[in-house]
Amino acid sequence: MLIRKLFGLFSEDMAMDLGTANTLIFKKKRGVVLNEPSVVAINNETGQVLAVGKEAKDYLGRTPPRISAIRPMKDGVIADFEITREMIKYFLFKVREKSRFFRPNLVIGVPSGITMVEKRAVVESALEAGARDVYLIEEPMAAAIGAGLPVESIRANMIVDIGGGTTEVAIINMFATAYCESIRVAGDEMNESIIYYLQKKFQVLIGENTAEQIKIEYGSAFPQEKPIRFQISGKEVFSGIPRPVQLTDRDIREGMAEPIWAIVDAVKRALEKTPPELVSDISRYGMTLAGGGALLKGLDKLLERETGIKVHIAEDPLTSVVMGAGKALMETDRYTKVFIN
Image (cartoon, rainbow, N blue to C red; front, side):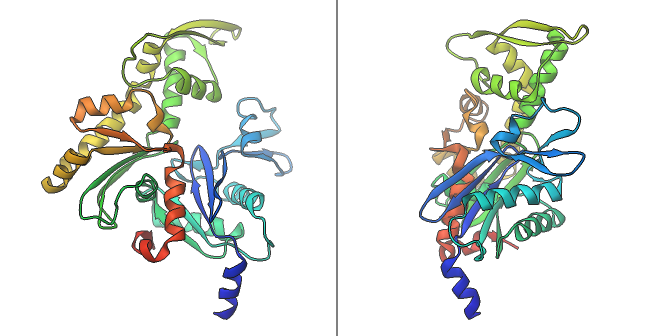
């Protein structure tokens, strides 16, 4: 016990948002010290890791046969145990400053719908990557804490956390979730929908990175004040030659309609299944959007129109989960009830 306490004095405790699209790390007294894509590039012949994070993301869609760019996280959980372990190890090594002999405690945000097998995979990956003790916190709870919602209050707080692989809709009060649903529809599905839409309507193929860029720059869930016209270049399906295509923001809305409405339906289900007293609180205080998907233009307006409830966007949606996990890490006595077994 004494040795563990001594190690604790010298270790650099951290919180991690191990996301499908991006991994973020929070350190005490430093804030967010890492925000990189959850991508690993490996040599298929030797198994050697060639790049991780930002550099590896550039490999997507551009690799020769002997190299693969892999997203080891799928729908918010581990799809490739070995690659995830290497990715976590790389990120932890990158941000640790003190002696690497002292292993850090680590708080990790995970989807609310995670299974026991998936929990074990997350914990074992982190331990093998160098963590001393690993604590898990559900992402919607972490997002609510990071967004500054009073999760300890008897009043109901509604959080909609839209990440890369999952959307989490939760009603939280008294350090617990009165209702929570995790759907595996989020930013990645929006990208895939754009790719499929352009292929079907315009017979043009584009890559994952291009689809994500289109979503960020021109995507919207609600008609904008001024229509936007823009041009992209893709590969013609039948001939394989490059071909420019003129598009509008309406095209992209149509392309993303299915995943967007899946999120809207999840929010409506949450309201339908929540007790009247808690819905009354939500009607009064509104709901909060977090995660990268909260930045999709017009999503707040669409949800307000469909539910009649005021929608707030977290101050920094992209870091809400890791900031909330970090706050729980720094105030463990206060937030001890939010950690999951």
